[in-house]
Image (cartoon, rainbow, N blue to C red):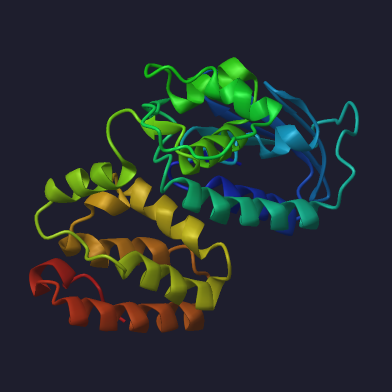
Length: 281
């Protein structure tokens, strides 16, 4: 089994390995990075990443939405570095994925660049920072990307992004190229007749009713697979996106339920018939 993470999300790949009780080595690669996760009958037994072994290696690629994966069957496990039940780690994975979506409101991408906020007398109380927060703050210099800051601090990207969000909340750092909201607004202005605010939330809610908490990850991955972003998605491509999302719903009854809900959305948004002619129930 092999493929591209731009076509199938890493969350789906992991769930497939777990639910079908795979045994072997799952290699994930992106650029110069590689993560190996070893399964025994669907249970994670060992994981290795550039940051070490065990659970932290398992969670290392959680932000990846591009790269490749290869599952080598029956690859031997040299040692066991993961003892926690895999179902518990998968639940945490899904929770972290949802938290990551909130973080992306402040840290839109791993290539975002932050700078130290200008002192303007706004601080009226002492601010205490943890060792990791100081480690991150000291490496923000208006030039390093968030990914580079994480690498320099030797911390996982997710932890780094979460810390930057906390520093941003305290008013200590700012997005160097302007606020995330400004970035989103600029993206929207480049698209004629973009999807209105709130649509993707409704789409995720509708998908969650038939597929569970993985819905937000599925929608985000399918948008990326179409070469677009939520901030710059044309309304005319909604039927195309719905068809793409439907491909990951195996149950025909649940798929029809989701399609019906999206048909109502398409009618309400008055998507031009010429662009929705391939969307049928």
